[in-house]
Length: 282
Image 1 (cartoon, helix red, strand yellow):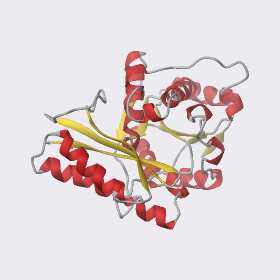
Image 2 (image 1 turned 120 degrees about the vertical axis):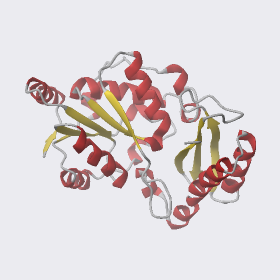
Image 3 (image 1 turned 90 degrees about the vertical axis):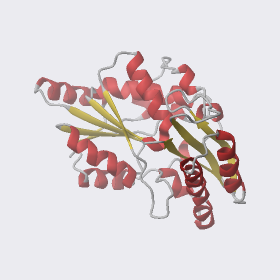
């Protein structure tokens, strides 16, 4: 495994790989890796010749009231996990190299960004799309893997790739959960013991929504009401949003006719967590 921190060095490496006829699979991360990332790396190892993982805490996707400096970081442990998952290249550039003085070009995926987390975190998906297109341009992957826990992010990246005719296969990977159901997230490390227990209300709520849908309830309103009740019964939880929406456009649905996304964002103490499940007849 090789660690690359220089953009030009990464570009040269990717160019050599392409010239040799090999394929590149890319897993972008902000580090502080867990088994959810591990599942992406394991799948990525199967899908191509060279597996590249980035570790970059992207400053431009953090809002003014969000603490970029407080985002958890542990590069040594990340490198150990990367090696254990047979990563070929870890690309970890600096913010100064990615956004040098005078940087002024950003990418907006307009309609998809104007739902769910995009409403609570204005500018977030502009930052996500901008850093991902930069990483794609530097690494030149054939395939890129993203987790479905951040379902809106996955849709934004897929739309960007389609709209800009980027020849990359974007693969969504299932949510990986702890034994008790909590979706794995680097942000879980911010939870104290009581908050960690309280955070289970997210999983309990979406499971209740799934059970209601599978019992034959197709109207969104009763599902949303029951999900909200479960969250609001937890004293440490504050709802940001709970939505039943179209899995492609993220527009709110009143009635589920085929598939729908049940998505929620909840603050547990100071930590904002997201979770979702696809409600489907199949």
